[in-house]
Image (tube, rainbow, N blue to C red; front, side, top):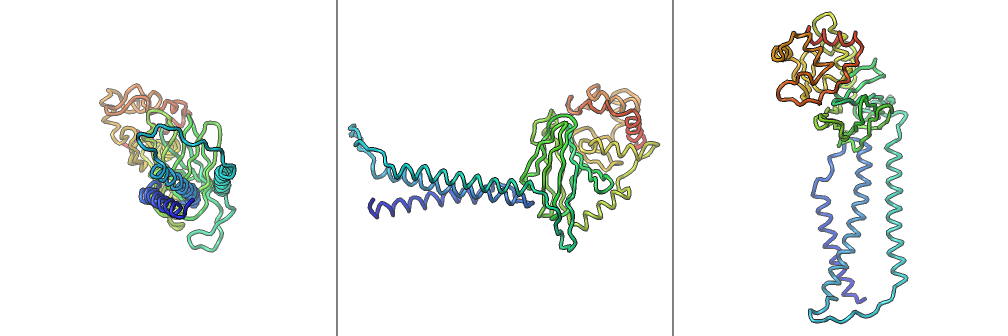
Length: 349
């Protein structure tokens, strides 16, 4: 091949490579990473993207060069010259893709292993003392998330709160159907399967509030199964835990207020409903602060209306909401828990 042809191919390759690189770099394909695991996943993404850009530039340059230099005349209907295989070229175009695929496999395997590894200790927030990984039990159910911190007297919350730069071991379970936990900025997702405990390791690296999304179709309320992951400094996280341990969650009126509040939270009611006595701000289901008005609309006494709404959620559905969104699984609550929950909801009016 003449030197001029090589120069033309190189220039074409640089042109197509620059165009592809511009598309890759200027379009925000991925969210800004907020964890060590997301940083590693992004590295794999850009490693593969770089290889793809190089291959695209080479192939596009050869195709365009061939179209320009070897295009047959419009009136040329003759057969092309017989060409035999080129052993060296065939070896190259077999060996190079094999090497690239192997490199991608090795890098991906290393990243998967690192992301699945739970460090034994980590320095966080500038503190010199090593911190053990934080364990959080994640419970998914239609259509809400519940986060329990077993190392802190089983503090529970409908919002995932994490200290900055501390490794977190998420243990995921589902009460009803398959759900899938995903925070886009953390870069990983994991299914929550009934009867199984799956795990996810996350080390937050950026302060902020990020969406928690269910990515497994789990019923009519799937699109609204949302929560938040709040990454805070270690000091603020410790203060939040202390507040929760000290009864920071609002109690309710009536005899079963305190236990009813705990039952309300542990069953993820705060993930779907707004209810001021429990500091709940969910938007999936009706506003429970308006229970007396809703009971009058249904033509029932308040206590009876609350009980029926829990055990038979489709018997009366507030206008503007769909049937089938609230599962009927709460009918299986033990009687003492159900009574305490009803007392909490009724007594807080």
